[in-house]
Image (cartoon, rainbow, N blue to C red; front, side):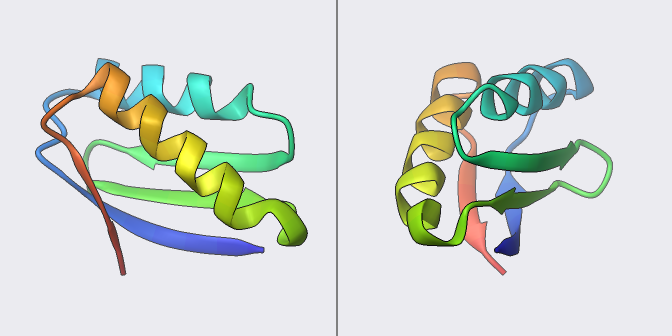
Length: 73
């Protein structure tokens, strides 16, 4: 399953890269792309575990960038 999300208050490209690298390490993630320029995240993960993986991805976003919110597009 592949879904797009809007990231609010993402402060820099370095944070976007750290978020992307952290999410890629999660089991079940096929691919993820985080763009500072567009403030968007595209998450591709296993269908059966998508919600669980998304929740873990949000935790990583908050750890790297506490003020950043992940909004469903």
